[in-house]
Length: 393
Ligand SMILES: Nc1nc2c(ncn2[C@@H]2O[C@H](COP(=O)(O)OP(=O)(O)OP(=O)(O)O)[C@@H](O)[C@H]2O)c(=O)[nH]1
Image (cartoon, rainbow, N blue to C red):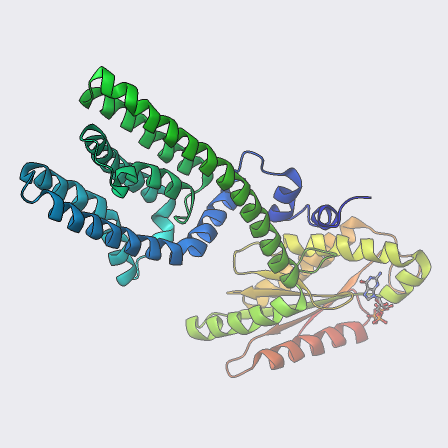
């Protein structure tokens, strides 16, 4: 017996999120489109932490510099001057994030690219200060800034695992190179202790982040899948009644605003009860699925919508489609369905399964409900007139 979530994902193999859930993501990477979507989601989730982190960075840098000012104003003014510049560079990313938030710029769009660079920049500065305090044997808390940044790269900032790992590793590599340039060989011996401590932080950060991001990705896929389930019909994968109703209202507003023609086409399989009764419910389901797949092919433009609005009732909503185009589409649908030649042993009209179609064009002043009723009335007329045809209201 498969676990429940595996079974559910199996049901949604046709959706990108369901497929990804089934295929897994051990390398912490999705297919390109999903990966972009996930990064935006991660950025949205991390927004509060990013701003909080930026404010904390500013407070900590200001606090450090205040203490350093007290300590070195008289004893080492040259180091203090150098420090002022270094601390300014450290504070810059915090200022940038706060400013971006104030002006409502979307941090999440740049977070995954920009933050690793900023982290490495601040990491270089922190490592430079750390090395100085190491040489002068200053036992201050802010001697460990680079270590703190290595931990930060894995958490809070909304950076994905691989970029965080590269940022943290870059900080360590740059620290080693800088130390090799600045320190004597005996001082370098001591510095390796700091490096081993950084490597330990990197290992702990990377393992925890990997586990955390794995579950974040899983959660993201399940959430998106739930959203998809709420809007789609499980048998055909077309939009369900709820999302059709929403789309109808929105499209009608757009048609009114842009003065574009809007066609609503309703379709109802003919003698479907008899089909079910003679061939069984599973065969009926298969016919619905088959027809849904066919209808989906007629929703070609981005604003077109094909939906299953009832048991064996379907709808096609076409913005910027006039009456003659709508009729042409209805005629194409009838012949495409006839070409499939699905045997219907209990139909009075034809040896094969057929459908009736009602078309209504939106008229200014008409509400969504009135437009639907008009298409439904046309569908009724098509049924009354002998089925397997379309009627334009
Ligand atoms: N297999 C299957 N049958 C369904 C589903 N939803 C509704 N039905 C059946 O569809 C049938 C609809 O029957 P009617 O409304 O009488 O329509 P009809 O037999 O197609 O008659 P006309 O529309 O006049 O041609 C009912 O028997 C429902 O049980 C479904 O998801 N799967």
